[in-house]
Amino acid sequence: MVSLRKVQYKQWWHNLLGLNLTKERPLFSYFIDDRYLILRHKSPLMLLKSVALTSSFVGAFIIGMYFLTFEQARFFFPDNPVPVTLQTFGILLMGSIYGLRLSFISISFYLILGISGVPIFQGHNGGIEYAMGVTGGYLIGFFLASLLNSFLSTRGFNRGLSIWSMLASNMVIYLPALIWLSVGDFSWPEEGKLYQAILPFLLGDFIKLIGASIVISFLWRLVGRSED
Image: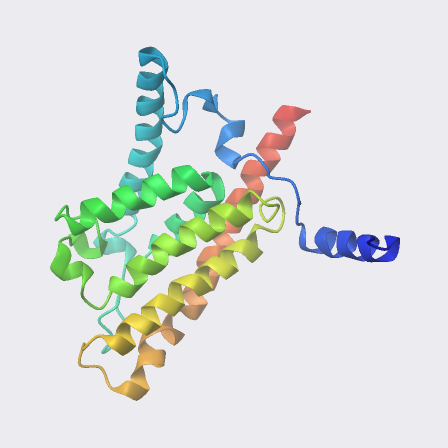
């Protein structure tokens, strides 16, 4: 039998982290009627509404990611083929706003479209050849980070302390990128992989996740006002 002190300590730790043991509704569901979402209805009319609503959210994410990769929204460090973009900002926002299933659908469609040749990756690039290049590991990281952030956001890491889930998700982007560059033959010196793949982006990514967490906190304040 679990002691009362152990339960109290566990609850204190969860409160410190802002962790809610019960599953929480995704942020977007406070702003719309989500009964029609995620393609789960049997009647034709409900299914049609579900397809339309889900498609609108997926489309909004893809269009947003496209605009975040415009020439004006990216730059390159000297001797580094991987650009600095606002893509991670979009990934973090999507993961915090959408639920796990909607995030999975959105990021999957984004990657499928890009790999199939639609120029929606940074620099208006697309295609399997581009996806297998130096940015391939980051694309894998985007997929994993969006799912992790969505999961954590519905487990209490959203209200007030969303920065922690975003920080963890950002780390998930770096790991596949570093492994990808280590395994692939991209003509980079072995000792320069960490410097080129991770270190130049740390400050910018931290600023982006701070900005994304501020946006999420503002949206939760709107939710709180609407519930009062």
